[in-house]
Amino acid sequence: MKLLRALLFLVVAAAIVVVALLLYGAFFDRSRPIARTRVVIPSGASFDDVLGRLRSAGVIAHALPLHVLARLRGEETKVRAGEYRFVPHETEADVLHALVTQGATVAEWVTIPEGFTDEQIAQRLQRAGVGDAATFARSFAAASIVVGGVRTHGLEGFLFPDTYLVPVGATPQQIEEELESGFLAALPADASRRARALHVSVPQAVTVASLVEREAKLDKDRPMIAGVIYNRLRLHMPLQVDATIEYALPHHKQELSRADLAVRSPYNTYLHTGLPPTPIANPGRASLEAAFHPATTKALYYVYCGGGGHVFAETLAQHQANVARCLR
Image (cartoon, rainbow, N blue to C red; front, top):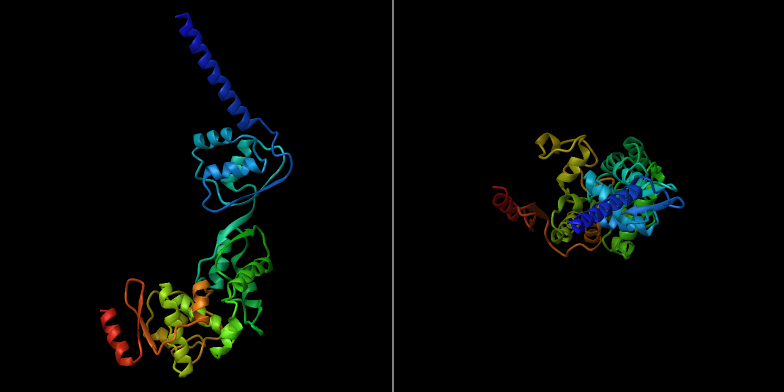
């Protein structure tokens, strides 16, 4: 009996020591970090990955106290991705609070989806807490870059969709440089040569890419849609791309009316032949590749036919039959 009581005492004492050590490690130990420390938490990182990064950077000495504290608080899944700066001698409770509330965030991960317009990018940046959407939108519209020897009119189409680590409070110019660099890196290496072969400038080919981006749903259709666009340009046929009408309207509409198709705008490709004055969205890599390397085809028409895919036709009669079949 005495042995059992002794063992029980040892177990309780050990438990008290463990709890005391965990409490000390979480709330009182200020030995780490020893200097201002930068830690980047990538999007989708597990909590174990977060703990590993913090320990490797010297922000925490041991992972266990922070792990237990996070589990008790139910905060293991509440850590926000981004770039953090930790000041010297913080407790692990302070570190966890910063990770959950973004109190030490100096940069945010921002994902720009393919097909976003500059205005949508500005709104996404504002929602991420990076800055003011109206300021970004004005700057994007006023700025320009030289692509293939031609200066662009604004940055629509030339801000590459990707995931970026954006400093909180970054200037529009800083963000423009980052997204422009992404665009230039994604531009096909033979862009200038291919544009000449297609009888367009590089910015015009990017405009084609933006039309493809907004029209196509499947990557396999992108070269064919680009081929149709170039065929119609060569024949001086109106492109009649619905996405250009949507771009011209003040608000996005799911379905266009007859009045919409008559809207007075240089972006109305039902009323005007040729390409719109600028891209209508920021295309991704697959659409850029399709615009500079379109499919060789005689097709002049396409229509969405369900399942994400389009069907193509060389004649109006074939197209009308496709429309009747696909839209019934």
